[in-house]
Amino acid sequence: MVQSSIIVPTHSSTASNKRGVDDSSDKDKEVGSSSELQIKRPRLDMTEAGRDRNKRLFGVLLGTLNKFKDDTQNTSEVDKRRREINQKLQEKLDLEKKAMAERTEARKLEKERMEQMKRQEEERILAEKRELFEVQQKKVLANFLKTTTEPVLYYLPSKLTDEMSKTIDMQTQDALTAKKSFEERRERRMIGLRNDSLSENEDEDT
Image 1 (cartoon, one colour):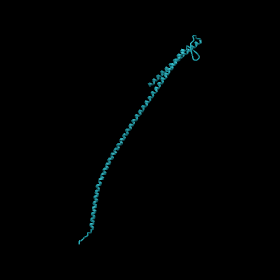
Image 2: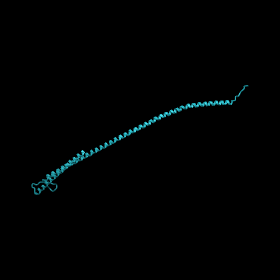
Image 3: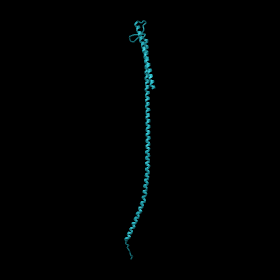
Image 4: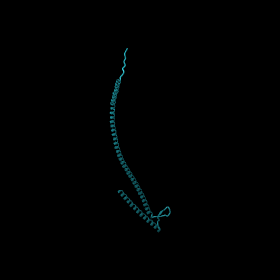
């Protein structure tokens, strides 16, 4: 018959085992903590590197923004100067256009004035010729008698009565008076034309 034996764990062995387990757990915890520290440190290092990188990126971005701001200000100044130059050029162009329009209008008015003076001179010459013809015709017809009926007929009898001679003398005197009046009027017109010409020359000189 085989003898059996039962071993009852004592308190000390249980405690020892427990301590062993606890020690193992503590060791595992220490190992775990060490592992966590080893894992977390790179994360801290990565965060600091990221911050440095972010700072650099922010610095670059800030520099870019400042450069853009400076470029924008410079561009604004250039645009402002360009607008001022364009405005001055436009004002100068407007003044030149206005001056040209005034010169064109002045030439137009001068041309119209000269044409009007030419027409007036032609009319004056024509009227003078007509008046001269009438004076000359009156002088020629003064030596004739005329009928009192229409149409008027001029005649000269071979023998004149005193009344006829008196009529012819009166007609001759009227013809001479008409000629003298015509010559005086023509002289006054010539003087007036000379004065007008002198006034125009003085205006052109001033």
